[in-house]
Length: 68
Image (tube, rainbow, N blue to C red; front, side, top):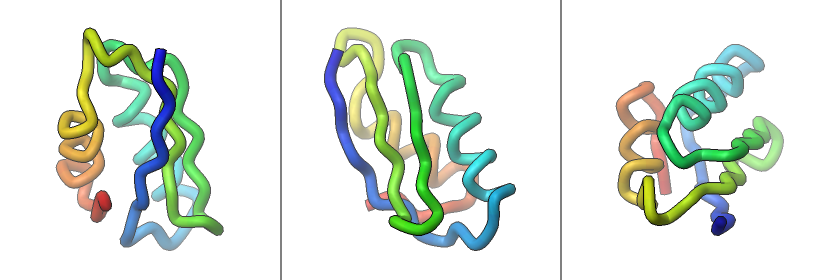
């Protein structure tokens, strides 16, 4: 398992946090996703054999947020 922190832009409320958390945890290979509105980031624990950084960022942008 690997850990990464992705900057997330465009979140303004707890519902946004819930949306980002849900799309990340819905990806195969993601063991854990902790999203912080205050820090504007998502900390993700994932299996790189199943999902890559681009897929993580893509899921965030597909949900309507900015992923850095």
